[in-house]
Image (cartoon, rainbow, N blue to C red; front, side, top):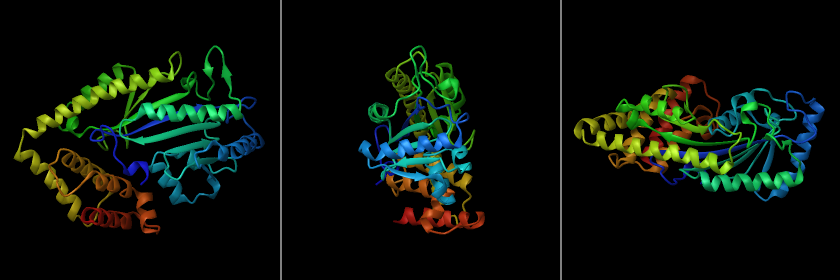
Length: 334
């Protein structure tokens, strides 16, 4: 199974972890200053070296990827919307079969190394990211300053060029109305925190570093881990408090489970909100009919592009809402 269908450490709260490293090749301007010919040269260099890195990476040019597949990659957080929008000859990704490694070529920076894992796994991801980074650097020299570190297109990424993220599920804090207080505390520690699907649209949040200069990669990871650990404790306390409400809380869980199981039309936003409560109930052992794998499958296949890829057909919005309820029912009953 791909990494996003597996469970890891602290998976009841931490859905996944990600490390991203930005690099630029020495002798070339940033992509906004590069000519098309230079960008094609960068792509050619990367196509030449990537197969020899040892991760079974396949280079896919963006122009050769169909629209639904591009959208599915966005839904999996493998590429950005902005990258997918401008289909140029020089844009590409290098991705392995498990999709836990995805290197984006000629986005805002020449190279964006991304590694992913289920649960809280920043230490192992850091080792993997650095290993890939150093292998590439031996073959392609990076733009580097002795004073500032690795140079990037956006000044806020200069230094390590690294972003470490955890993606966390916080329904307990939201239901107990403590979420805003926790988010303010996270910001106060110099971390970024944002809703994964937009403000208020779900109970999934991303915690990441906002400092890359004057700090080591290990310090970045340790800081993000420390904040994430504190949030895990707060979320589990909130869930413990909710569990004391007994029948009233269980009723809320099962009402949402009933909506998920028996609805015949499910818009995406509504589905994500319901799924959040159902995941909470499953993680707390209230819903016995589901397990972690079924929850992860529902999160994956309820999204528009991956839903269409699952059924192998292009759908309008109404058809998606109907098919979404069908795939949810299939997973629950499987």
